[in-house]
Amino acid sequence: DSGFRGFFSVGKTIMLKTTVIMKTINTTLLIFLTLASLHNWQCRKNDLVTTTITGRVYDRVTGEPIEGAYLNFNVYGSQDESIGVVIKEYNVTTGIDGIYRVIHIGDEDERMHHWLTHKTGYMPMLLVSGEKQGVENNIDYGLTPQDAKLSLKINHTTSDQNVLYVKCYNDAYKDQAGVNPVSYSGYFLKIDLPMNQTLDTSVYLPGNWTTHVLWDSLQKTSIVAQDYLHQDSLWLPRSGTEMYSIVY
Image (tube, rainbow, N blue to C red):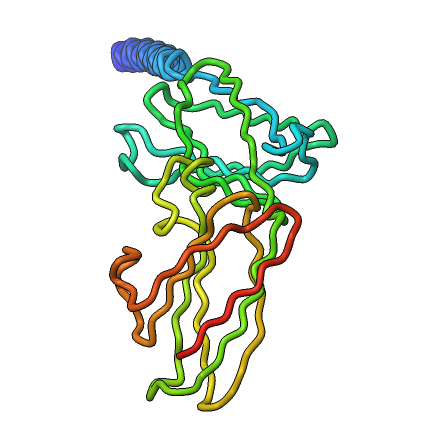
């Protein structure tokens, strides 16, 4: 009987020691995994960069700051994401001094680019890039005022089609943004006018530029000026109004 109790006591001691060893192993494993996780987080953290874009939006004619201008910036995915997919968007407005500021913290291979600057009464500025990632960028944007009025008088007298497609633009768009003005800006009007009816409408464009008016009774998939049935040009003075008649 005493031998049995001794054997039981030894077995119990072995089980206690085994339990202590397992707890020690579990604790050590937990510490190892925690340290590994912290290491990975630190490595990931070290890959993050801060990109800042700041600047001034101003009137290209007067040089004065533009308050309340709207700016849009898109962040495109890194190689861990989908390249070319917008993963974050920043929308900011300028203060009374025309100053804006955007800060993005992300992967070093993410790309943040300007997409749009807009203010009522000014031509929108589209697709202007040049930002460097991981540094502070100072970029000013000058907007061209739409300070001239083109008054259109449209007469439907002969065409079998009631619908007329009109495109109005001038080369200020190309001068401002470096883009094809017919492709990206201007005014595109779809007029539905019954026979022997007249319509008066107006569009606002930058002044002191030659303005182009294109029109066709057929809808155009092309935006090339030469593809329109009719095209004309006129000088649009700043802060003035020009009358133009279209008969179809």
